[in-house]
Image (cartoon, rainbow, N blue to C red):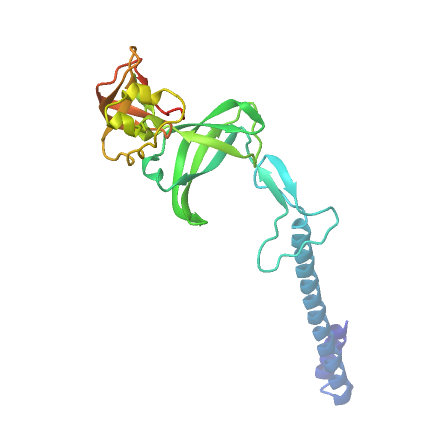
Length: 283
């Protein structure tokens, strides 16, 4: 409207050679037109600003809905409905979600003395306190090289892949695992305690007054005995065997692998069924 009024006066003034419209009226009309144009531009800027604010509000509104990146089971929830959540230097943890409980991982600590025997793909068995009479199978999927030291004991973390199709195992259960590092067939085994045994021979036996068999049989207190021999080392060891006649004999053997309780015998004078001596009864 301001623009049309100014245009009308300007045309009228030009047609009458400035005789009908004063310069003051033209200046006032021009100023009114300029103010109207500026007002339109300001209104358009306010509209654009309002539209940007609407888009920002819509974006923030869309972020108020939290969507899980995976499908699974919620293990824990750290917030309550209606609680204000603010992200400062790090994203807050809202939920802990297990994606698939049918496929789980077992984290076990391997002693540094045994870690050299652990390889990916090895089979393992483990038990949990919830099912003390059952054993579950697993497989070594990863051996992590970062050491963990606690009270001077260094261990390494191994990850075992576990199939949990029946969902009997829950996250966070404590497990005891045994990893099979080597497999032997038809091995001759004897208890490790047999290598720690050495008969204590009374002084009268050393003098020839009694046999060593008699020394091993409990009887009333006799003379003081000698100290047991020092622990054996190396691949060749000696063990004591009880014969069917009641006598004993010393046998040299070559040892192999051990599981901590039993030792493999590679060569020597032992046969299946021989009775090795692991301890001596005090008289």
